[in-house]
Amino acid sequence: MNATTRRSYAPEIIVAAGCLIALITFGPRASAGLFQIPMTLEFGWGRDTFSIAIAIQNLLWGVGAPFAGAIADRFGTVRVLCVGALLYAAGLVVMAVATTPLTLHFGAGVLIGFGLSAASFNLVLAAFGKLLPEAWRPMAFGAGTAAGSFGQFLFPPIGNIMIEQIGWHQALVVFAGSVLLVMPLAIALGTRKGTGPAPVASAVNLPNQSIKQALTEAFKHRSYVLLVLGFFTCGFQLAFITAHMPAYLKDAGMPAWVGGWTLAVIGLANAAGSLGSGWLSSRMPKRHLLAWIYFGRAVAIAAFILIPASPATALAFGVVIGLFWLSTVPPTSSLVMLMFGTKYMAMLYGFAFFSHQVGGFLGVLLGGILYEQFGSYQIVWWLSVALGVASALINLPIVEKPVERALPQPA
Image 1 (cartoon, rainbow, N blue to C red):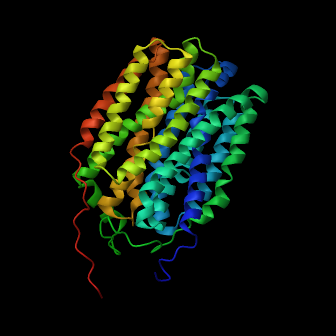
Image 2: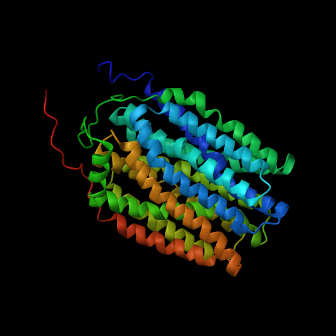
Image 3: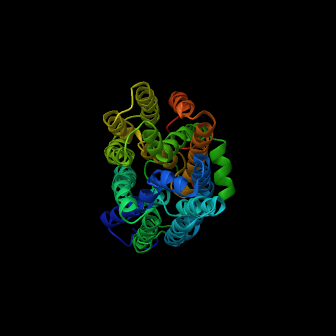
């Protein structure tokens, strides 16, 4: 291994730092639904006001992800993560002091959305692809995703306790302080042009390929387009459940702790699901794994809304849907790397994630708008079921092989 490909840190340190970043950044975002009821009660807003803020957040997270990925691919990961952490923390503080819908939309929507695009597991997984040996990658993708899930398990119960003990304003400020821990952790994920081991089971990297050429190649590739389209459903389902599950359960007459613990159980189960997905990604066709995940979600959601709601059914649903929650990420990121190599992985995964976040935007927004119009979330629940079946079918025709490229000729 020459000087241009030497890693600064051992794989164990890289994985540990990346997992901690995923945990810290995913936790506050996964707790957003806890703040809907106290904020709307204090200011007399409708749920659509809060939903618009979280919808903007999801959309801008997706819009910013390809650009943050392209900058990280070109100039390295550390600076992008640090800027993202600062924006994320600032957004939480603005959200804490917001007294008007416009301020809420700016803090919770714009600042946190762009902050997440530059400081979340998207960049962590891309850094893993660049820095880790081939044998480490599938499980590292699963571990990074699982760590984000554990953040979802850890933060909502803590958020509930803080809201009750010190108030929702102060709880958001504490979350903002925790996000700043990303900055020292980011050092271990430093990547530069030419960093990392040469890819083995992926497309040949073209040293002189431009960003425009990479994008043209990707969006002419049928399997990549199918992968991107299928990822829309993942975002729709996850964002809707994250933002509206606590309110849905409260409407069913359950205490606030049920919503918080349902989100927490989803996160804990997802840690197991993501690790299992990472393990399965190297042992079965990834398109089949994705199809089963999307179909499993559709069945779980249908069963949940057909069975009378109770604390037991809510927590059971949390366990089941949690196993499928972010388990789409390891096979999706692995397919992007397999098709196109590691050079522009952060950017190309970022475009797939943009589709995910457009789905998230619509899931959160429709949840709020349709609730205000009909007084119920049923339409969005059933739309989630239909999209799950559609994405299961969309992923089946994907061809799992590297894009054909001419080998670079020696000088």
